[in-house]
Amino acid sequence: MGTASSSPIGRLKAYCNDPKNRSTVDVGLFIILILSFHFLFLGWQAVGYWPIKGAIDRLSLWAVNLLFDQSTWVLQHVFGIDITTLTDRRLIAALDHAGGWANVVVAPECASLKQWCHWLFLMLLFPGPWKHKAWYIPAGLVVIEWTNVVRICGILMMQIQWPGPNTFHIAHDYVFKAFFYFVIFLMWVLWVEKFKNKDLKNKKPENNTP
Image 1 (cartoon, rainbow, N blue to C red):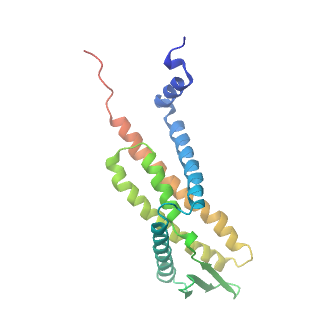
Image 2 (cartoon, one colour):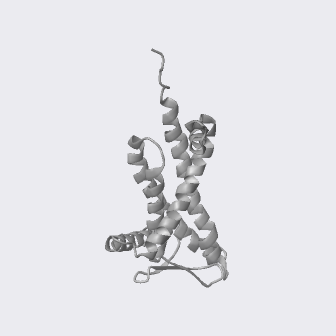
Protein backbone atom coordinates (compact mmCIF):
# COMPACT_ATOMS: atom_id res chain seq x y z
CA MET A 1 0.00 0.00 0.00
CA GLY A 2 1.27 3.48 -0.83
CA THR A 3 1.87 6.08 1.83
CA ALA A 4 -0.25 9.19 2.19
CA SER A 5 2.53 11.28 0.60
CA SER A 6 2.44 9.10 -2.54
CA SER A 7 -1.30 9.61 -3.04
CA PRO A 8 -2.50 12.31 -5.48
CA ILE A 9 -3.64 14.50 -2.57
CA GLY A 10 -0.33 13.99 -0.79
CA ARG A 11 1.65 14.89 -3.89
CA LEU A 12 -0.51 17.97 -4.47
CA LYS A 13 -0.01 19.08 -0.89
CA ALA A 14 3.75 18.58 -1.18
CA TYR A 15 3.80 20.55 -4.42
CA CYS A 16 1.85 23.44 -2.86
CA ASN A 17 4.11 23.52 0.20
CA ASP A 18 7.30 23.63 -1.86
CA PRO A 19 8.63 27.23 -1.80
CA LYS A 20 9.84 26.82 -5.40
CA ASN A 21 6.22 26.47 -6.53
CA ARG A 22 4.87 29.39 -4.52
CA SER A 23 4.29 31.71 -7.51
CA THR A 24 2.54 29.01 -9.52
CA VAL A 25 0.32 28.07 -6.59
CA ASP A 26 -0.54 31.72 -5.89
CA VAL A 27 -1.53 32.39 -9.51
CA GLY A 28 -3.49 29.13 -9.68
CA LEU A 29 -5.42 29.99 -6.52
CA PHE A 30 -6.07 33.51 -7.85
CA ILE A 31 -7.56 32.10 -11.08
CA ILE A 32 -9.68 29.56 -9.19
CA LEU A 33 -11.09 32.22 -6.86
CA ILE A 34 -11.77 34.70 -9.67
CA LEU A 35 -13.59 32.11 -11.81
CA SER A 36 -15.46 30.67 -8.83
CA PHE A 37 -16.75 34.09 -7.85
CA HIS A 38 -17.82 34.87 -11.41
CA PHE A 39 -20.14 31.86 -11.57
CA LEU A 40 -21.31 32.24 -7.98
CA PHE A 41 -22.24 35.87 -8.62
CA LEU A 42 -24.13 34.93 -11.80
CA GLY A 43 -26.06 32.36 -9.79
CA TRP A 44 -26.76 34.88 -7.04
CA GLN A 45 -28.06 37.35 -9.63
CA ALA A 46 -30.31 34.66 -11.09
CA VAL A 47 -32.04 34.16 -7.73
CA GLY A 48 -32.46 37.89 -7.17
CA TYR A 49 -29.69 38.32 -4.58
CA TRP A 50 -31.62 36.15 -2.14
CA PRO A 51 -31.95 36.53 0.83
CA ILE A 52 -30.75 40.17 1.02
CA LYS A 53 -32.24 41.64 -2.16
CA GLY A 54 -33.54 44.73 -0.34
CA ALA A 55 -30.14 45.55 1.12
CA ILE A 56 -28.40 44.95 -2.22
CA ASP A 57 -30.90 47.20 -4.02
CA ARG A 58 -30.29 50.01 -1.53
CA LEU A 59 -26.52 49.56 -1.74
CA SER A 60 -26.65 49.53 -5.54
CA LEU A 61 -28.70 52.74 -5.63
CA TRP A 62 -26.30 54.47 -3.23
CA ALA A 63 -23.28 53.23 -5.20
CA VAL A 64 -24.57 54.35 -8.60
CA ASN A 65 -25.50 57.82 -7.30
CA LEU A 66 -22.06 58.11 -5.70
CA LEU A 67 -20.38 57.10 -8.96
CA PHE A 68 -22.42 59.63 -10.94
CA ASP A 69 -21.58 62.48 -8.54
CA GLN A 70 -17.88 61.61 -8.42
CA SER A 71 -17.61 61.26 -12.20
CA THR A 72 -19.30 64.59 -12.93
CA TRP A 73 -17.08 66.32 -10.37
CA VAL A 74 -13.88 64.87 -11.86
CA LEU A 75 -14.91 65.69 -15.44
CA GLN A 76 -15.65 69.30 -14.50
CA HIS A 77 -12.99 70.10 -11.92
CA VAL A 78 -10.08 67.86 -12.90
CA PHE A 79 -10.40 67.66 -16.70
CA GLY A 80 -12.23 70.97 -17.19
CA ILE A 81 -14.82 69.49 -19.54
CA ASP A 82 -18.04 71.42 -20.10
CA ILE A 83 -20.64 68.73 -19.46
CA THR A 84 -24.41 68.58 -19.52
CA THR A 85 -26.16 66.24 -17.11
CA LEU A 86 -29.60 64.76 -16.72
CA THR A 87 -29.61 63.76 -13.07
CA ASP A 88 -32.81 61.73 -13.18
CA ARG A 89 -31.31 59.51 -15.90
CA ARG A 90 -27.73 59.83 -14.59
CA LEU A 91 -26.67 60.89 -18.09
CA ILE A 92 -23.45 62.81 -18.70
CA ALA A 93 -22.96 64.44 -22.11
CA ALA A 94 -20.45 66.74 -23.78
CA LEU A 95 -19.73 68.03 -27.28
CA ASP A 96 -17.27 65.86 -29.20
CA HIS A 97 -14.62 67.07 -31.65
CA ALA A 98 -16.94 66.51 -34.59
CA GLY A 99 -19.62 68.78 -33.17
CA GLY A 100 -21.90 65.96 -32.06
CA TRP A 101 -22.72 64.72 -28.59
CA ALA A 102 -20.78 62.16 -26.60
CA ASN A 103 -22.62 60.67 -23.67
CA VAL A 104 -22.54 57.99 -21.02
CA VAL A 105 -25.37 56.80 -18.79
CA VAL A 106 -24.29 55.71 -15.30
CA ALA A 107 -26.69 52.78 -14.95
CA PRO A 108 -27.00 50.61 -11.82
CA GLU A 109 -24.93 47.95 -13.60
CA CYS A 110 -22.07 50.47 -13.81
CA ALA A 111 -21.74 50.72 -10.03
CA SER A 112 -18.78 49.10 -8.29
CA LEU A 113 -20.93 46.52 -6.48
CA LYS A 114 -19.76 43.45 -8.39
CA GLN A 115 -16.10 44.48 -8.23
CA TRP A 116 -16.42 45.21 -4.50
CA CYS A 117 -17.84 41.73 -3.95
CA HIS A 118 -15.14 40.30 -6.21
CA TRP A 119 -12.44 41.95 -4.12
CA LEU A 120 -13.97 40.86 -0.81
CA PHE A 121 -14.33 37.26 -1.98
CA LEU A 122 -10.76 37.15 -3.28
CA MET A 123 -9.09 38.77 -0.31
CA LEU A 124 -11.09 37.04 2.43
CA LEU A 125 -10.25 33.61 1.02
CA PHE A 126 -6.72 34.26 -0.22
CA PRO A 127 -4.01 33.52 2.37
CA GLY A 128 -2.23 36.31 4.18
CA PRO A 129 -1.90 38.05 7.54
CA TRP A 130 -5.23 39.29 8.88
CA LYS A 131 -3.59 42.26 10.61
CA HIS A 132 -2.91 43.65 7.13
CA LYS A 133 -6.16 42.45 5.58
CA ALA A 134 -7.99 44.60 8.15
CA TRP A 135 -6.82 47.76 6.34
CA TYR A 136 -5.85 46.46 2.89
CA ILE A 137 -9.34 45.20 2.02
CA PRO A 138 -11.07 48.56 2.77
CA ALA A 139 -8.28 50.40 0.94
CA GLY A 140 -8.88 48.15 -2.06
CA LEU A 141 -12.58 49.00 -2.04
CA VAL A 142 -11.72 52.70 -2.23
CA VAL A 143 -9.24 52.10 -5.08
CA ILE A 144 -11.88 50.10 -6.97
CA GLU A 145 -14.42 52.93 -6.61
CA TRP A 146 -12.02 55.54 -7.99
CA THR A 147 -10.94 53.16 -10.74
CA ASN A 148 -14.60 53.05 -11.73
CA VAL A 149 -14.69 56.85 -11.76
CA VAL A 150 -11.70 56.82 -14.12
CA ARG A 151 -13.56 54.28 -16.26
CA ILE A 152 -16.70 56.42 -16.57
CA CYS A 153 -14.66 59.54 -17.32
CA GLY A 154 -12.49 57.65 -19.78
CA ILE A 155 -15.46 56.27 -21.71
CA LEU A 156 -16.85 59.78 -22.19
CA MET A 157 -13.47 61.31 -23.03
CA MET A 158 -12.69 58.66 -25.65
CA GLN A 159 -15.98 59.52 -27.36
CA ILE A 160 -15.09 63.22 -27.26
CA GLN A 161 -11.63 62.62 -28.69
CA TRP A 162 -12.54 59.97 -31.25
CA PRO A 163 -16.18 60.36 -32.31
CA GLY A 164 -17.59 57.34 -34.04
CA PRO A 165 -20.31 54.70 -33.88
CA ASN A 166 -18.05 52.09 -32.28
CA THR A 167 -16.07 54.23 -29.85
CA PHE A 168 -18.40 53.70 -26.90
CA HIS A 169 -18.41 49.92 -27.30
CA ILE A 170 -14.64 49.74 -27.69
CA ALA A 171 -14.13 51.88 -24.60
CA HIS A 172 -16.81 50.19 -22.51
CA ASP A 173 -16.40 46.54 -23.50
CA TYR A 174 -12.65 46.34 -24.04
CA VAL A 175 -10.41 49.22 -22.99
CA PHE A 176 -11.79 50.12 -19.59
CA LYS A 177 -13.14 46.70 -18.65
CA ALA A 178 -9.61 45.34 -19.09
CA PHE A 179 -8.23 48.35 -17.22
CA PHE A 180 -10.63 47.75 -14.31
CA TYR A 181 -9.61 44.15 -13.77
CA PHE A 182 -5.95 44.95 -14.39
CA VAL A 183 -6.06 47.30 -11.39
CA ILE A 184 -7.58 44.53 -9.24
CA PHE A 185 -4.86 42.18 -10.47
CA LEU A 186 -2.15 44.71 -9.57
CA MET A 187 -3.58 45.11 -6.06
CA TRP A 188 -3.51 41.32 -5.67
CA VAL A 189 0.11 41.16 -6.88
CA LEU A 190 1.03 43.85 -4.36
CA TRP A 191 -0.68 41.85 -1.63
CA VAL A 192 1.17 38.65 -2.54
CA GLU A 193 4.60 40.25 -2.86
CA LYS A 194 4.51 42.77 -0.02
CA PHE A 195 2.38 41.03 2.59
CA LYS A 196 1.59 37.34 2.06
CA ASN A 197 4.99 36.08 0.90
CA LYS A 198 6.89 38.60 2.99
CA ASP A 199 5.04 37.31 6.06
CA LEU A 200 6.03 33.74 5.16
CA LYS A 201 9.67 34.73 4.75
CA ASN A 202 9.67 36.41 8.15
CA LYS A 203 8.43 33.26 9.88
CA LYS A 204 11.33 31.31 11.26
CA PRO A 205 11.38 27.56 10.52
CA GLU A 206 10.49 25.33 13.43
CA ASN A 207 13.41 24.06 15.44
CA ASN A 208 13.03 20.31 15.72
CA THR A 209 16.26 19.71 17.61
CA PRO A 210 15.82 18.51 21.21
